[in-house]
Image (cartoon, rainbow, N blue to C red):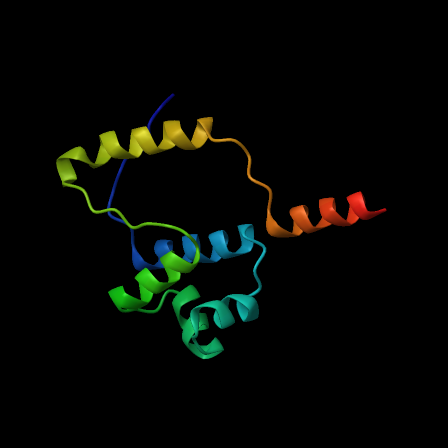
Length: 108
């Protein structure tokens, strides 16, 4: 497996990753806003790449069950490689809407 180059992410990339993860979880912006207690305007700015406080980022990550990891620059590539290996071995997780569909199918 070829490891991607580890690098410091730009704020716009972090915002795009947050939006992608929210979508993967099957949450609309409205659903997610209720979960984290933010206004739609505040959260739209974050997903569009505006600057945010670290405390806001941590609140969003906690709601998505994610962690932000800070590592020494010289170790970043090794850590990135290990993470990629773990992700490629991880089993596929059902999205919330997939689970609900399976439950409905069982009821029939």
